[in-house]
Structures are given as C-alpha cells and as structure tokens.
Image 1: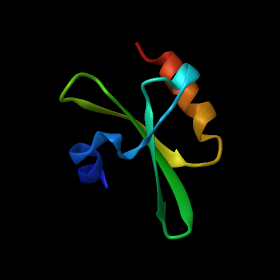
Image 2 (image 1 turned 135 degrees about the vertical axis):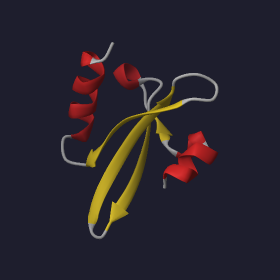
Image 3 (image 1 turned 180 degrees about the vertical axis):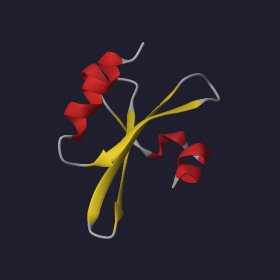
Image 4 (image 1 turned 45 degrees about the vertical axis):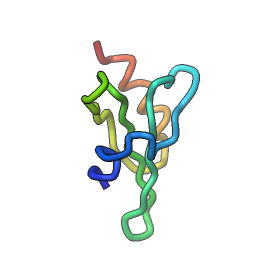
Length: 69
C-alpha cells in the first residue's frame, strides 16, 4: 500500500476545511476498514500523519494536527 502512495500521491482523497492539504487513503484488512492520512511536506517528501480504524478517525486526525507544530 505505501508503495502505491509513494508512486502516486494522488491515490488518496483530498480533504477540505481544517484538513486542507491532507489526503486520506481507505483500505481494508480482513473485514475492518482503515484510513491512512498523509500530506506532501515538499515536492518529494511524503509525511504520513496517522493510521487507524474508521471510527472517530476524522475527529482524532483533526486533534492530532492541532497538536503538531
């Protein structure tokens, strides 16, 4: 999966509002859906932000980004 994102960073869905600039890629492991968020730190550097199950993911992602420098 991370190779797909490294090869094509537009594979995830771009977010708006408070999460502008963040992309989220959804995938399943067995029956559980997970989300992986990332953003481009610069033209060649991909910053992985958070990975987790779908429940409360966007709330936790927003809180995580507020606490980062």
